Image 1 (spheres, rainbow, N blue to C red):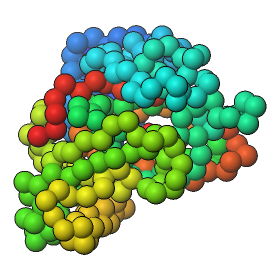
Image 2 (cartoon, rainbow, N blue to C red):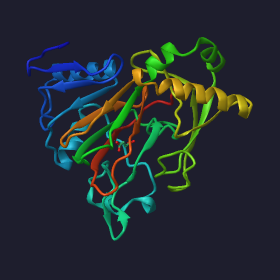
Image 3 (cartoon, helix red, strand yellow):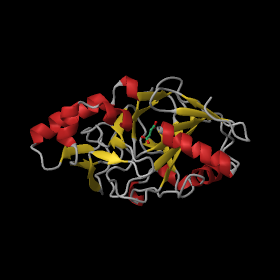
Image 4 (cartoon, rainbow, N blue to C red):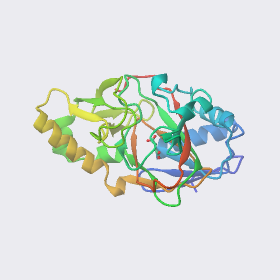
Length: 287
Ligand code: SIN
């Protein structure tokens, strides 16, 4: 236990580099200022915080998101919204494999998903993502979180110096879960950002490229860019830098997209999975 406040807040680290469970908080009620500061600091320190056993309405989820910053928009054109989005409050994205008339009602419906940083393909990516689980399959569909700080700090110095100061180009087809799977909707946004991002609040550097969305290092031969990116991805996804979240219904996770990436494991297509996702608006272009 690292910390205790008036509401008997408990912060329990989950791995050496990433993830902490926060106990003693019912997100339906706004925590007092001291508790909120402690949660925020835990989030900066641990990159992903987990609140178990929450019972949130859509209104509660939107309010809980706003404790930590400004609610982000659903950043995809309305014509590409799955049917279930219309049942959500503005700012809530439905993630689900449940089908009606053969069509998934939510985004990112099926199976395994490669590591990525949410909205890295935008000029100003989301600062954070909150995800609340409503229906969970009996196995699989775990979400893996990798610390970009740990990956940066331990990266082979030769690879690091080759990439220091460089920018990478990112592209994403909405809905695709594996690079080049030919699924999803053609991207309407692409962006380039530093390969190593300096966190605007902690000042620490983190790996800021990922297997799903990063296409190439700018100003570099394709062959060398591919070789270096592959080495960085393999390093950044090492199990020692990763927290694996095994979902239960009622979990709320808040993760920092500036310094962590995440992925999803496969799960049975015969079982239902439904989560509600919100984001916090970013205010800065990555530096
Ligand atoms: C996401 O990448 O935002 C979705 C993660 C998940 O479905 O577990």
